[in-house]
Amino acid sequence: PKRLAVLTSGGDCSGMNAAVRAVVKMGIARGCEVYVVREGWEGLVRGNGPEHDVKETQVHSGTPSTADPIPNRRRGNFVATYGEGELLKEGEGEQTLKDRYIIRVGWDDVRGFASLGGTLIGTARCAAFREVEGRRTAALNLVKHGIDALVVCGGDGSLTGADRLRDEWPEHLAALKERGDISAEQFETHSHLNIVGLVGSIDNDMAGTDMTIGATTALHRICEAIDSISSTASSHSRAFIVEVMGRNCGWLALMAAIATGADYMFIPERPPTSEDWQSSMCSVLDRHRKEGKRKTIVIIAEGAHDCNLKPISPDEVKDVLTERLGLDTRVTTLGHTQRGGAPAAYDRILATLQGAEAVEAVLEATPDKPSPVIGIQENKIMRQPLMEAVKKTQDVAKAIAEKDFNRALSLRDPEFED
Ligand code: F6P
Image 1 (tube, rainbow, N blue to C red):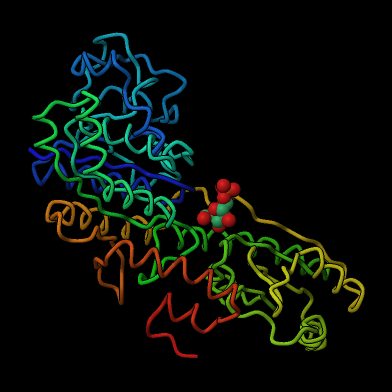
Image 2 (tube, rainbow, N blue to C red; image 1 turned 120 degrees about the horizontal axis):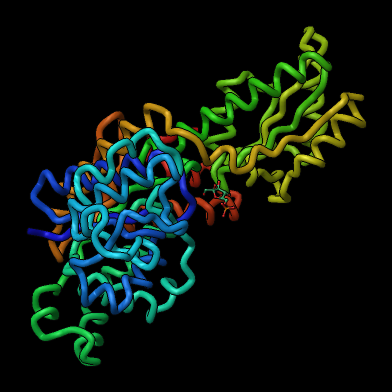
C-alpha cells in the first residue's frame, strides 16, 4: 500500500484537526498506510531517532509523556488507540510519543478531532527546513519510513517549503544515496515525492480560493468579541478601536465590520484616499453620533496603512477620536483569541471536504504535473497549481507595496471589478 503522511505547519487555525482527520480516514479508506508528522516541518527534520528506526514496530506505552500534544482529556484515548498503527497497544513497551515525530495512525486515532481547535499534532515555524540540509534530512526521514505522498496544511510560507522539497527531491535522493544514507533500492522506489497543499490560515489571503480553513472561525471569534465590546461601549457611550489580525489581508476586518455594523474600518487593500483620513473619519463618526448612536466602533486590520503606506496604528486613531471628537476611547487588540477555540461548522466541513480531496489528489499525482493546492471556488472544491496560487498571493503584497490596490484584489480574485 501507498504510505501517506499529513502535517500541519506555520500558524495554527481552527479546522486543522478536521483536515488531519479527513486525510487519515480517507487515506485509510483508499487503502493507504497513513502517518502523521508532529510539529510540522520540524518533526520531519527531527524524525524518530535511530533507536526508533531500528525498532519500528516496538514503540509505545500507555504512559503518556507531558510532551504529548494531546490535551489531558483526550490523551488516554489517543495513546490507547495508537495500537492500530505501527505503535504498540496500550501497556506494551516503555516509549512514549516524546521523541517520535513520524507516527503511523489508525482510524480511531483521530476520533473527535473535527470539533477541536488548534492542531493536536502540533505545528512549528522551522528554521532548519529553510536550509537545504534540513530539507535533505526531511527527505531522508520520509524515505526511511517509505513515505512518498505528503499532505501539508498551512499558509503560503509552509506550502512554498513543500513545493521546494518536491522540486529538490531528485537532488536529495542522489546525495543521500551517494552518502550511503539510503540504499540503491530505496533510491529506485522513492524516485518521486507527491505533495498536495491544504490552505490553513485565519487570514483568508490565498489567491484563487474563496475561503481558507480557519478564516470563518476567526471571523466568528472577532464578531463575538466585538459584540461584547459593543455592549460596554454603549453603556459608557464610549468609542473602541479594535485591531484584528490578517497580515496584509483585510478580509477579517472587512467582514467583521459588515457583520457587526462597525462605524469605520481600515484595511490594507483600500487605504483612505486622502492624506487627511482623520477628517474623513471624524465626519462619519460625528454624523453617527448626531444620529443618536451611543457607541463608536472602529476596526483596524493589523496591516492597515494610509495612502502613502504609512501604518495607521490603533493608538493614533484613538488620539484623533479623543482630541477631535472628545470621545472617551479605548483600544482593544484581539490578538490570538482570534486563532483559537473550537472550529465553526463551516470550517469543519471545508476541512473535511478538502482533506478528502487532498488524498484523491495525492494518489493521482504524477511527476510531470505540478503539485496542487486544494481550494474552494463558488462552493465547489477544486485543485489549482500550488505554486501559481502561492506566487499570486505573494504578488498581492508586492502590488500593495506598489500602491496598485486593484491589481492586489484581482490577483486574489480574477473576477474582481473595481
Ligand atoms: O497568518 C496568521 C496570523 O495569525 C496573522 O494574522 C498574524 O499576523 C500572525 O499569524 C501572527 O503570528 P504569530 O502567531 O507567530 O504571532
